[in-house]
Image 1 (cartoon, rainbow, N blue to C red):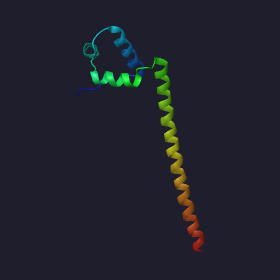
Image 2 (image 1 turned 90 degrees about the horizontal axis):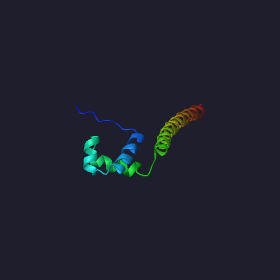
Image 3 (image 1 turned 60 degrees about the vertical axis):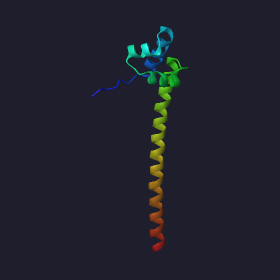
Length: 96
C-alpha cells in the first residue's frame, strides 16, 4: 500500500514559502516534493497567509477546541443521566 505522509502545519508553511521563492512552476515544485498540485492549492488556501507561529497557535486552538467539545459532550451525558434518574425518582415517589 502507498502510505501518505502527513505534514505538520509548520512544514506546510515552510514548503509554501519555499515554492514562493523557488521560481519553479507549480507542477515542477510539486513533482520535486512529491505532492499533488491540488494539495498545494489546498494548503495555500488554508495556510497561505500564516507564518509558523500562526500555525502553532492554530494547532493549539484546534487541540483546545477538541478538548472543550469532549468536556461538553461529557457534561451533556452527565446531565442526561441525572435527568433520567430524577424522572425515575419522581415516578417512584408519586406511585406510593
